[in-house]
Image (cartoon, rainbow, N blue to C red; front, side):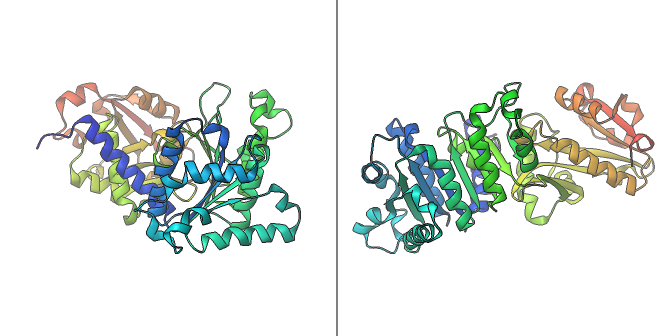
Length: 413
């Protein structure tokens, strides 16, 4: 059978990633804070409509909160959204999700909201009752506030009161970038708090993002599962792909490394296949991949985001009391976030518990070579690892591979 074309591979990969995240969102509620000034073309409404319909069909409840530019009253903004967005949200594939009659669905889902409603407990509860009254009849609420300056705080407050799964903040600058200009794909609450200390945001060039960062921290402390910050153009990529497009904020314990569970096997197989396609991982037979699944570890960001995998293979090297790190792969979004190092530390702890003499790894990738050196591994020759490693090994790949080894006596307990 011929291999799929590159475009087909990309489509297949995108599908598997999207399904992974749709599964996370199923039965959950997402709140989006959307400045109207970002919607300058028809394609912006079209892209949002397509994404939201997909979420609705997925049994995901969606709250879209728009902030006006000040040139329209709240009532005028509602009418504009009904006209521009309504036809994109209420179509044949979503109409059955709403209890109201067809002619009433669009008008009922849109409402003007006042940020002043949060000023007192009574008015806040009344507003939340109004929103829930809409959501009782269908999985979509579209709210409009005339003051964009208060949009993020307002959206966060509503998300907190409802205890939603995720808050998504859309901002033209997209995610947060570090001093080096590289985007920070992940930030937990302790790092976020350190950044919000006096002078820190200014020193890192993020003075203009301080208010947004405060909203993200407040939301996390208020019990929201996670916060995403991205641009409008990157919204679908942020929600549905491993690479993401912005910055993901979570509360604590951002990275957990545990043995792989059977319910994760299919997703891990897709990650390994991706690593093989990208040339980062050696091509393996199904039985070899099964061995990785049964002996491997997964790194999970927050409670939902599978960030990387790796395994320790020992069976072929029992006589030498050696172990091999195989299948080490970190998805693009979380490269540079310390995920790979956490996986290796866990594997080395496992090796110590098994009283192995040494652990080795083989790679043809330059970045991986630098990574292993940073983890305390030393470059050795192929003869310095068990000969069983090279039985049936592709000669062409062996000529390119670099071997690294670390003695367990050198690894800190």
